[in-house]
Amino acid sequence: MSDKLIIFDTTLRDGEQSPGASMTRDEKLRIARQLERLRVDVIEAGFAAASPGDFEAVRTIALHIREATVCSLARANDRDIARAAEALKEAPRSRIHTFIATSELHMEKKLRMTREQVLEQARLAVRFARNLCPDIEFSPEDGYRSDPDFLCRVLEAVIEEGATTINVPDTVGYAIPELYGNFIRMLRERVPNADKAIWSVHCHNDLGMAVANSLAGVKIGGARQVECTINGLGERAGNTSLEEVVMAVKTRRDHFDLEVGIDTSQIVPASRLVAQTTGFVVQPNKAVVGANAFAHASGIHQDGVLKARDTYEIMRAEDVGWSANKIVLGKLSGRNAFRQRLQELGVELESEAELNAAFARFKDLADRKSEIFDEDIIALLGDESVTS
Ligand code: KIV
Ligand code: ZN
Image (tube, rainbow, N blue to C red; front, side, top):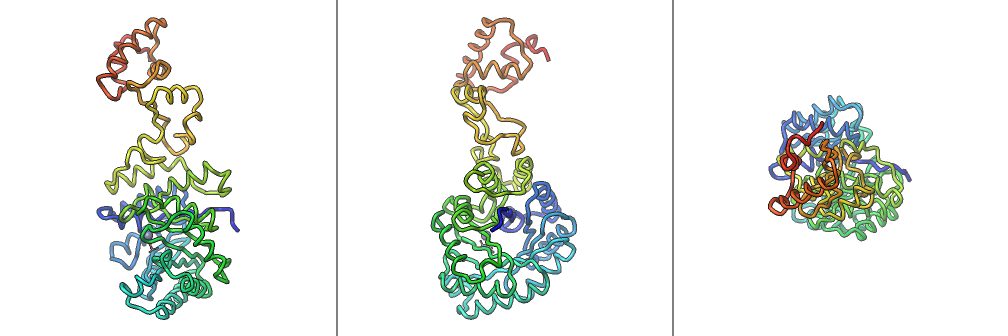
């Protein structure tokens, strides 16, 4: 089993399915370039057969991205797969990702197909795709809610036809971490040719557990690819968030013991670019990329962080691309945090008495104003105190 975790970014495909998040070709290319700086392994650039615009976006990204594998989604039919192959033809490394639903609900109500028809279509689609591209991913849509016996038959068949990655979507975010992890493990144990493919997890966040489910799929199930998006962008409540998965695996290497090729210093720039492009604002308390993710407001926490950062920080803000951790000065802040900020502002006070007086004025202001900015402090001290 490989000890590398493949990061498959689908911001430009599943992320874009978020209502109101559609992007132009040039916006997608800008994001793809940032994903390459981030060093994701696979960029799912779009769904080439969905529209001429999406075809163009996939083609343009395939033309410009040199390091990452560029992927296009395709339904399990020849037309979609041929369009995907055509859009990807200039990419140095390309992947066709084909899918068909396998749950009873989807087969009966949506596809109006029998199990045998779905099995045959999946098999033929992978056979056709494999003749056009050596790297083929297959997804049984709504896989987590599918009958395990039937799912095992489908997965065995598509691996036999040459699928190199098997992705198991929790399409509607219904999974629970332990159950999803066990589900992946069960499939890998029961599908006879399972070892011929890399197993992948793809989770949606309807119950707020996409990241936890993905990590359970990795740890319990043995998956070695995670499908995710920047800021967790995606339909409904979104997809697994890339930054959270990557930082969980890196921060808790003691638990996961896996390598990820991501340049984490590019995480915050990627988050900002996606937020600005889509207009989807990142909530301030969002892990890793939220404005408050490294901010300390309570006096006790501020004092601790100033003495030793790891008292209240499990990651370094600079490691994920923030300029530094942020001490928010307010009414709960202590003298130590205030003194430190004065030093950062180049303010030198002559004596302890002067510091005490300034601190008293600061507290007085903080009672009236929830957050004190650097400009407030400078105004509070008078310009003559600023020496640099
Ligand atoms: O959620 C899902 O099932 C998907 C598939 C197309 C992979 O996005
Ligand atoms: Zn999805």
